[in-house]
Length: 248
Figure (cartoon, one colour):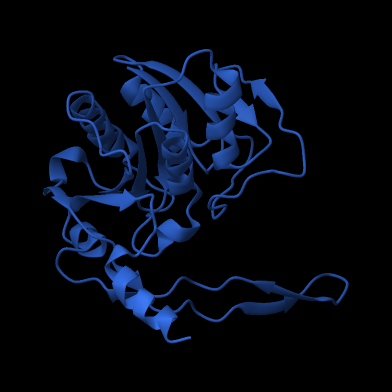
């Protein structure tokens, strides 16, 4: 298969190199990733500055933009032929529950789906992470399976892998997104000139982490595979919303 690889940790990230190493023997790969760490970029696009692409010594391409920029540029301008699949990762740290709203890793996969291509996002649940080879092996198996059993046109896969040797994985579970509590308070400080500044605090603890969630799978040593819908419409609420609107 012809693959486009990207990430949000930047073109020099270990996870990206491990992903390439795990897939390059069996697939034709183009790697286009941000020239810096873009964690938390979500689906942002660089609409107010031109994008530049530069080839690195290892053959990867670096872009002065976001993860979504990289995928959009790759598919819509740079690559001569469309890839058959977009793979984003391997992220340095988990993307579980509400994390997917902010994740540049998931956003790169989403952009691939917006461009009409199947896509997966993969994250290693450890920071800085040791066993990227475990996640790469999982992705290799899933990519091979996708070639025969494609995803529905409105979905991507969000894969989270425990940071353990492959032999210690309990298996793979299909999961739903869990939920976190509200994030902790922001950290108030001052810059060297005495001006007030703020840092984001820690993410909230798990609120919905019961059986069947991505949190639960990872906590129990399983790889979590969550199908995410690109269409965010709450279809189950359409009838109720129509009745609500009629009361205006």
